[in-house]
Length: 243
Image 1 (cartoon, one colour):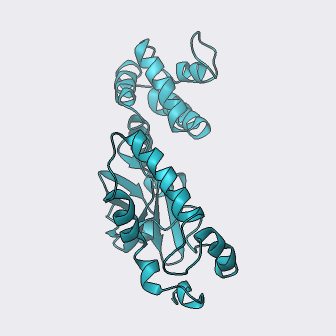
Image 2: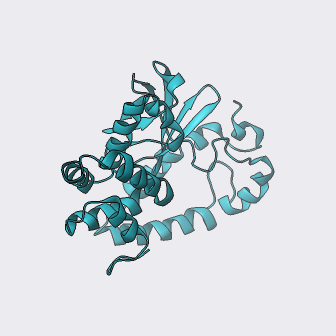
Image 3: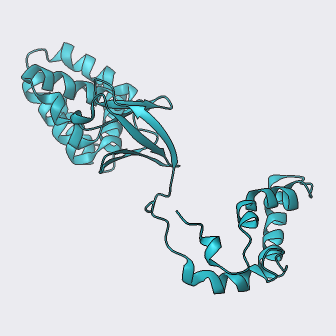
């Protein structure tokens, strides 16, 4: 890709590439700071000086004036609204997930065994393979893994597999999830599969991770173990619970 600086008369390529070195040498090593607040105050003053007042050695002009001339050559970066992100190569495991930074992120089943590109952003992780992408929260709500709704069906192929997979996903929502289902299985051994689990799963699809986790926490705290209680909590039908 051609360097944009080479298209602009008077701009020295080395000066553009050494911008980080310039900031370190002209600001950080040339000043002393008493606190973060003091650093931020001095940085604001320094940026005003170097961008709005000082003549740049590379162009012989004030950067603010030069920027107006360079705008016709500027184009949006081709990396989308999230930015470029830090790139890492990862391999999709047999469970159709990649692991990075202590978390797991789901992928389509057809990606199993493939090396994919993981781009790490401040709040998200994006997985790239061929022309497809998967967008995950960088820090999953359950603190363990992020499983996108479109990646769940392969887990539900067999009837018992679907039952166990749905229960495990719900148990992983929060620490109280495991306690809720442990009590539920013991208290309703004959009905939790056909009655409670389908209703809790329906609430999960309707409400999402955080709101159902809130209902689970509320139910465990009051030792009310049953899908109907979660439904009442989520609808705001119990005192102290907001819909």
